[in-house]
Length: 123
Image (cartoon, rainbow, N blue to C red; front, side):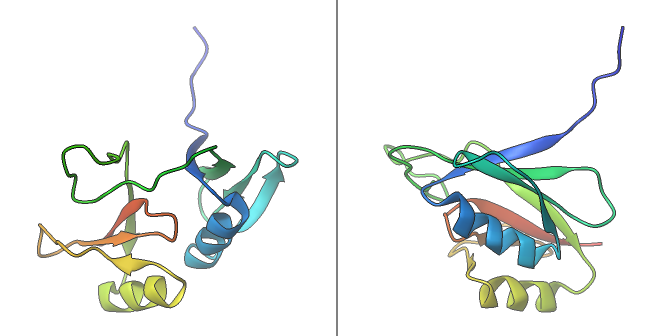
């Protein structure tokens, strides 16, 4: 049987170009592939993994932490960082928000400009 390799995670939003710009800057990445008006892929240095972005009609940002009857998160991203305070500051400067509730002292939960949760975790 042939090997199955992890290629990408795709995030929906109402404006895939705006959201991808946030992650290009956050990860010091670059756009590695465009899918016309449907989306694009961002690569980060040191990895073959890609983050893909696409528009979703009627996109509703997830509510975090979850609330009954509200749009639930379907996944979240985790990023390892060398300096937690610096990473939080950089993410905020680029348009992210620190989540109103934090559950693990050593990890900071952030929300990207489209509302997707992601965690900044010290190495």
